[in-house]
Length: 312
Image 1 (tube, rainbow, N blue to C red):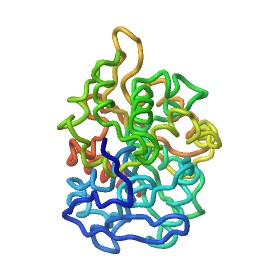
Image 2 (cartoon, helix red, strand yellow):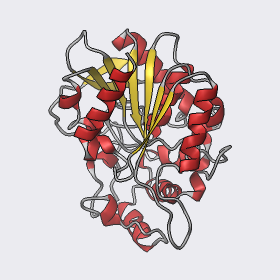
Image 3 (tube, one colour):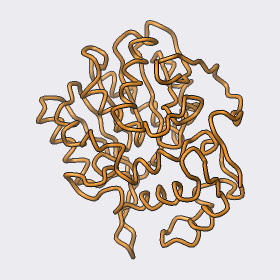
Image 4 (tube, helix red, strand yellow):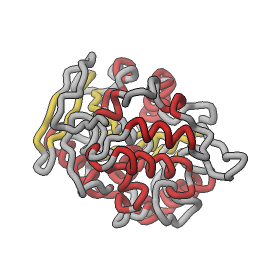
């Protein structure tokens, strides 16, 4: 078994210089691209992701934006915090980052769980910190244990994955049974197999080496959002919001949804934002991969740039 933690040097070189800032409870890792004076864009990666999932998109985005891309606590080079993974703690980190490092209003774009955090910032950041928020294929409602709309995380294929990651890898890689995880994925009921998830299933990919699997347990157990229900959060947003909705389907045998969220959940989120008096745009990208920014960085950059220009 192989164990990885933020105390072990598992990291690799990248094309952008990484920086760190002390935010109190954590040290946050980030990169910066583009020139000061341009509109500021804050990028928040998906679960299991680090800032470098945006690496291909950064040069394109930097033509229009002053870009900051971060590692969330428990991911990348940022501090791991056992027992402290929640939407409110993630959000507090980002509020401090904007206050200490950026120090001007930002357009925030997050993917997946990062997209939930973009909505959180729109609702709960300090006044004047957020110009607008992009929720890139974010599992609004769908990542909750008992959501007010639609299915929850345990009725979703990804919930089964989170459970396996937690069971076989353990909090802070305390178990580290990678071989057992791969076997469980391949023998499980899901149509997803290990070769669809990992380039080389015989060893953890780089993003997993940099990831605390307690994140997965926090989502599967529901503790990550227990004090931050999504309907309440969305009803308090204070900026324009863009929801992009990507590839999704329903498993033909189990009936489990396979996308980040359903049409019902996306449109309920839109209703709540608009009921709060804010503009909410919905873009359907049914052929886009969950992480559009990684697999189609040009389309992602075009989507972000055009929408930002529409705000003016």
